[in-house]
Length: 402
Image (cartoon, rainbow, N blue to C red; front, side):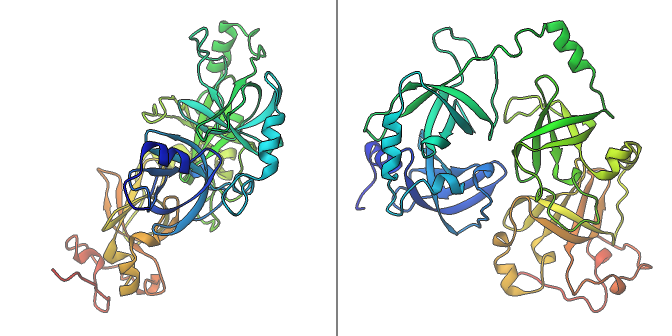
């Protein structure tokens, strides 16, 4: 590579279904950002549900399968079944091309929704996970389809167009129309929706798992979410989402109405919880949410929402946040140097509360380690200032040279 890449060059290099290598530049709530050494004008994006169980860190190198590209943004997947459909030299296995050519126009096949953008990005498992695209709109009638499909959902599609040998050629798939819900009148739909309220127990299906929340569907076209703090009890040490998977059905309790999502444009409608204690009794939840019950020196577990140069922002519950200053994260210089690399979105952090802002519902934490034991805390110590409230004789204090 000796010069800036042209549009044709990058489209050819990032061909749909090809395997490419990139470096993790940032980890955001909406996905993992990749940089490409030979293509600095192109940005890679791996949505969290496309990580396939892989753990990545800023600065690490990853190989992913290109599932879509548009306007200088390349969507990739690390899912083993997709990456495994490519040979080591980066080209699709021979049987893949032969399998796609075996497809016939208007043939019905089963496909899995990989990404929802301005079109559905699908993979076809029985044809070596070939990548295809389905429009969100019926362009002949200019009408939106009857159904909305979610990440991980298996749907039946009809082959609309076979891709050419050109790198930009695309397999076009058309969702098969279904009249399954056409007999349900609008009045019946309204009735079924109104049956749900805060406190209701529902059976829901997991349709997406993100670092900080699980998205579910239930009832007739209703959606909800489970916040990461609404899965396990506080004394559990395992990761809340470790035993959950897309397609799994769970019993959940509605604990609140959700706010409208500006990012997706979808009203999630309900906040759900699958905490064992809440499945038995909703009273406990409403009582604990009424006020901020945390105090100085309490030990809590929170989950990373965002990391910047000097602070880690965490969620303690749906309504309470916390932050951790770099110098409160460790006393080891080597760990302080790698501050941003040590934390990722969704990671659990255990810490001691050293500050409480009840008006903002914000806690300040000090990372809990072997040098921060409960017996070293002087419970009689009174708050003198924002600095002195968590500093006492014998503490190791770090600082930055100005």
